[in-house]
Amino acid sequence: MRADFGSAPTNYTSLIIALLLAFVCGHAIAWVYMFTHTGLSYSRSYVNTLIIMPVIVALVMLILANNLVLAFGLMAIFAMVRFRSILRDTLDTTYVLAVIVIGLACGTLKFSSAVIGCLATISIMLYLWATGFGTRLRYNLIVNIQWVRPAADLEALRNLLRRHSRKAICASQRSNEGYEGVDLSYRLLLRDPGRAEQLLEELRGLEGVARVSSLSAGDESEM
Image (cartoon, rainbow, N blue to C red):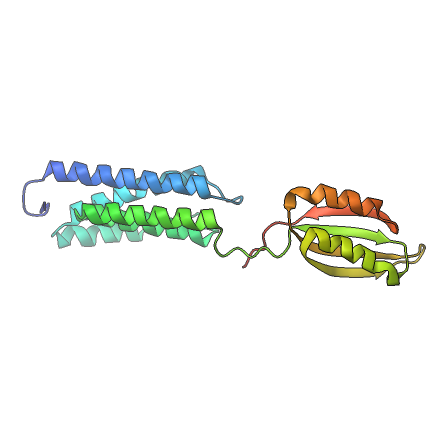
C-alpha cells in the first residue's frame, strides 16, 4: 500500500493507520521507559514526548512525500526549534532515537518494519533492565568498626566477615589518640544481603568490638 501525498489525492486510510501505529508504538516504548526507569531524572513531560514524537515524525514524513518544496520549508522551521532540556542519561537519548525511527517507518508506510522495530526495541530494553547488564556491584555494605583489642587479634574479626561475605576489603584503618585500638572500615559484598542485620548483631557481640555502624552501598556508577 503506497500513498503519494505530493501529487495524488490523500489516502486517508493509510494516513490514519500510520498515525495510529506511530501512537501505539510510541506509547509502548513510553510504558517500558516508565517501568524500567531508575534514578532521579524522571520527567512526565519526557514520557509524553516519547508518545507524541513518533506521531509528529510520521505526519512530517507523510506530508513531505515527493514534495521537495515542503521538505525544505519544514527543515527551515525545525532549524529554529531549540530544546532547552538536557538529557542527563544516555539511555534517554536512545529512547528518543527509537521513537523517531519508528515514526519514520510509519510515515513511509513501512508498517511491518515499524512493528518489528518497536517489538525489538522493547525486548532489548526489558532485557537490559531485567538482567542488570553492565552493572558492576563490587560491594553492598560498608561497615565501620571500633576495634579495641590488639591488631594481632584481628583474625577473629576477619573470619566473621568472611562467613557472611564473598568479598571483604579493608578500606581504611586509623588509630586515634585518646583511646586504644583502631577504627576500621570494611567494604563487603554479602553472600545474602537479607542477613545484613544478623552480621551486625554478631559483630556487636564479638569481643573487642566497641562500636559498629553500617551504610548500605548502591551500585557503582560509571561516568
